[in-house]
Length: 169
Image 1: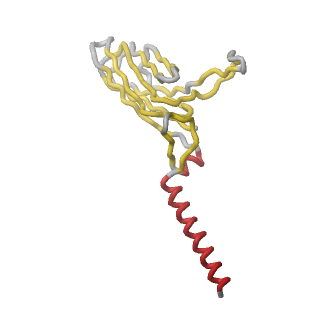
Image 2: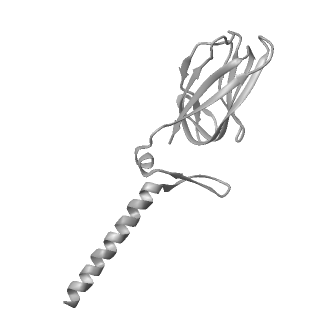
Image 3: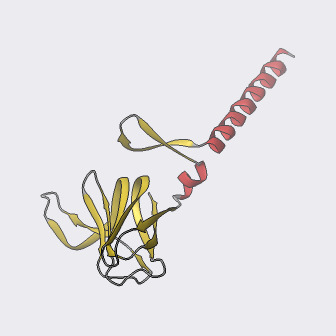
C-alpha cells in the first residue's frame, strides 16, 4: 500500500509540474536574443516555435508647405531580421516625396526611396562580408535590426503615409 501511495504522489507531482509548464507556455517564454541593457524578450511559445513574422505599422504625418513638408515616425523597439517593408502613401502625397528608414544604433540606413508615391513592397538586404571585412560579391542577407526604426519623409505635401515593417528571427 505504501508503494501505491508513493506512486500516486509521484504521478500527482508530475501532473502539477505539467500544469505549471503549460501555464508558463501560455504566458510566454524568455527567448535568448541580443542583450540590450537589462531587458529580456518574452514571446508566446507558438511565436518562438514557428518563427512567425511580426507586423508593425508606423503612421508618418508630413506637415508644411507643398513640396517642403516633412515628418517622422518611430516603430518602437524591434530586434530580429527585417523581412519586408510595405509603404502606403496617403492620398494627395506629391511625387517629390523622399522616404528614409533608418536605425540609430548601430547606425544603419535600411532603405531610401526618392521621389516616389507608388505604394509598394520592399525587401531590404545587406551585403555579406568575409572574415577580413571585405564585401562578398553578390552575397546578400536580410537586414538585422535591434533598435527602433525611424521613418522620415521630406519634400512632400501635407498628409499621412503608412509604413509597415515585417520582422522576425
